[in-house]
Image 1: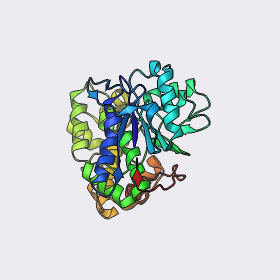
Image 2: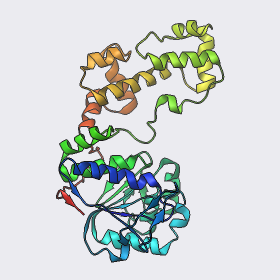
Image 3: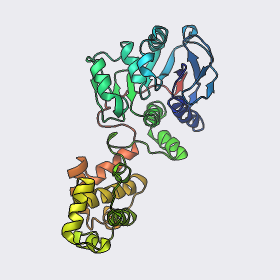
Length: 329
């Protein structure tokens, strides 16, 4: 595996994939990681950490199973760096699989490697990628996209998702699951970049009574959270609590409760094998049918299909993934 680094590269874009492949080596992998830079000089990352480089990109004389192109916060200037883009093209020519992490997609696009392909990048920059490179079909909500021999990933942690998918290609799903368990990460997070935690994307609310209600829902999704129960908890009328949800959160009490319960159900499905009746009861849905309706309505898949997706890194839109030999350079 060859990782292209440069001054100002984002540290986790580099170390995340490396850690996945290093962990895979503990379970039968034979990855050899080399860091290269356009001129062979050591680099300082955006975080201020120095990275020791093995050789200049131009001196790479071996074929790589994987070439990783990370991103960096100064990507607008990086896409104008001819030496860096030349290095991207040269490494791609010697690789079986070229992948980008986060804003590294801009480097692939600027080098012409994404022309006519589907791709993704961090959600904050997806519109800019589509605007700058109209020949690229940008999928802003994807965690990673596989098109031919090129793979692109979203935010920095999605580089881990992508790397696990590559381990599955090389060593099989069971080894990838073992690596994921060892690193305490998911095999694949079904759904896209927009599926952040309900609580983390909930805006700050000014009303103390509403904050107490929200904490109670998140703390025990299976409890009684009817409008009347929430109103009693807040010490206000049902009409007033409904108005607070609308004014402060832009949603209804029932919708918010369902989102919290669904998130709790997703966590149980991702991490365990409890019967659907147990999952439904523990998360407040009451019955497997209510659980199923919520998943189909909000995610477009059944709870069983959701759980199954955590048995492999392969997503529905990544069916073109090929297999590669387990030894990677």
